[in-house]
Image (cartoon, rainbow, N blue to C red; front, side, top):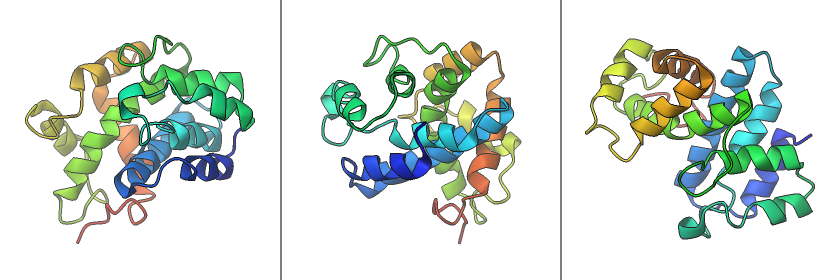
Length: 186
């Protein structure tokens, strides 16, 4: 089973840009919180989150087309590779998310971008952010406009959960790592 340490080391072989490393960490910690929600192994889900954009920096136009083989060679399991590929479903992959792990990754990938942007606008960052204030930003389509809200809502529907509940779980998971994520405020 992929550990967070292994995933972080593997990711570092391909991802060097600070904003992409930060995105991987945001998704990682949100995935850990989702795992806890579903009673699953938080570190394993974090590892999948850490590695989800493995090939993006080097192959942005061919995202996920250069992921499976190198990860397979590095000893990542087929189940773990499938989970990573599923987060691009309908965009750059035809691997449909079916497990809670896959559906969660599909959903939180974009969701964490809005959470991060909202937290950065607050004096105390994410530390005192409540879901209610996040939802105002989520509903404002001009805010963090590049984050695909339809995709997030589709993922929430797959999970059978409301976006505010998923956001609350992710915000709490990211709060625990506010300093590391640069979201502790001023």
